[in-house]
Length: 341
Ligand code: NAD
Ligand code: LMR
View: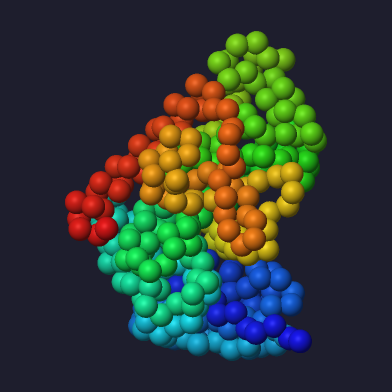
């Protein structure tokens, strides 16, 4: 028997990421080749026409799995019956804006969207926040949705994870598929910490393969610790800014790809013997303040993210995780003081 269509809402649908995302969702790459999707596109009134143009193109693809496209500027209608909510639309940082201004502007978007999800979404709704600052926007949305289980609100750090995979593979002369158990910790910002100390390259510990000791001592080559601290970590953490510098616009296709990966793995499961990274509500694991939406090593089993337990955290990692978590605590204080949560 054919499966019932799943309703997927995409906010900011006429934006860059929306354009790179919608066709892949409609083709079945996110929820699998046997799941029809019904798309709901939310835009601000000025961008509805552009979203209609994208919907015409979706029609022109004749995707067998696409069961319908609904375009609206009404938040309640956009989340009606939705099972997957991709919150992409956000106010970008403008010249002269402080981080607090951005958090306040986005509070005006993510608070009402959280309320609409609470009131109108399907019982099984899963939310992925892509719009920046993603972790704290997810916190704002979640705080407006008291009837939705908190773990259904997540923030995207899969792009950072994929960036780290590529950088590590290039350094090791390995394939990305040889690399397992890499982790992004903390915030989707320049303070994030890409952690190679549990990673494996073709079954061997990455730190041994690369000669990187956590305290900077020893190792196969003196330069390797420097590679970790001065190349790998900053390259991954500042990749978003480097893309903006090179393209003149923020990452779009790679961000859409990461959103597809995140939801795909959340719904369909992560492969055995590996994990991925996602911003999920902290249960206090690894000393991360409970309730923050912080990136962790995660697996998905039976449609739920689980934080990988019991990893040993060395002092090098501890300091970096704590710094990124502190930034999330500061952001939470800012939005709290603005009355947004
Ligand atoms: P964009 O400016 O091209 O598109 C954003 C769209 O959102 C616009 O069409 C705009 O009209 C719409 N929008 C604004 N407010 C809205 C609202 N209240 N409701 C519905 N739609 C609304 O931007 P983009 O390149 O698509 O990026 C979108 C967001 O994703 C930005 O915040 C960006 O910083 C973020 N981003 C996050 C990651 C990540 O890894 N988490 C990566 C790349 C980009
Ligand atoms: C990215 O990581 O590419 C984006 O979050 C960068 C940005 O600031 O939009």
